Length: 451
Image (cartoon, rainbow, N blue to C red; front, top):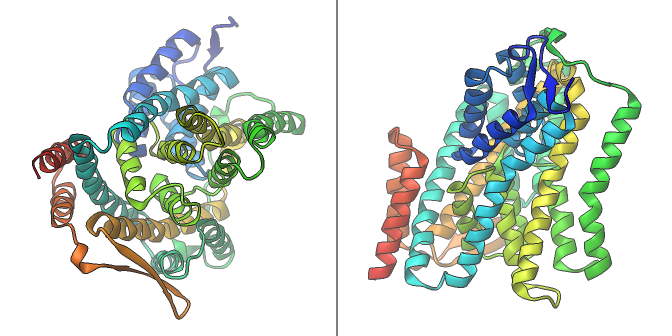
């Protein structure tokens, strides 16, 4: 076999060889077109690799997607990494996964610099004002879409309600909710799998599985290398800046986030907003929504918004460095520790995909987690809504509950009206997200410039 090609047979595509250079060009195309959230990104990968190139069979694609849905982290980026591994091994997985992230990283880095330097300019602040209102409508639409897919049984509705009450009123941390829901689903699968709509697993045809090493030695090598690379920048941050620096805090926090982020970017953002805004004080509430607006309008995974969090955190608390240098370094650090675990999950688990994805208890655990995520995203929608439409929101603790009380005289009628209009368009028509975001940005810029 040539060094530039990988054998692709056993029902994966057309058989024969695929030059690495051709695959590289295809992943560049995926990276350039990866707008619109995970659903749109997965559709782009399917169109290019299954429909157009025919390098990957439909069954392989669906099994890969099912596996990635079981993992914490951005499923579209993990799917790209898995398919890259399928075609060209570790080199192909690294190429596909890194190219998928790179355009979003560069775009959000540029927007973060512009945001810090020029956000006081009325036109720029107006753009973010309009985008922020539309983002609220997008999150509400996400609650509707994910809820329609996940909440098909009474048990699922109950789990979603419990998750919302726990995170909104009782201040239960997101990792606790995810782990609790997963354990509950796993346990229910043993006694009443029907409560979550999980059927008995069907044995999959494993004849399409590529020949690969499934030994313990390989697994230990992969885990050792990936974990060492994952934590290397955090260790460097501790040695250079100390245990209590913002770099160390960012590295540890987003590493923890990377292993509990089931349910997509909106669930992650609820967790990040709770911690970054309320506990660490890295951002103000409105800034978190601005960051999500950046991620919605740039290519790559929506979870790339965490880079914006790191940028602002280090710009304000720069450990004695030049604030711009500190902010850029923090952007790299946060992006690294957010996506490095995804490569670990894929390279470690890829040889076992067929066996894992047919496990009924894992499917039940995932169903319970997905139901809980609906409640978490609803919390994000309510929290965003209060902070978009009101200039002042008080956090009150009474009778063991946490309550958000908006100051009614501070209602921003322009923001509320724009958010409602965007929600009506998104929920009641087939207009895409990007045109609505563009319209919101234009309206916001005109409004702030004039008034």
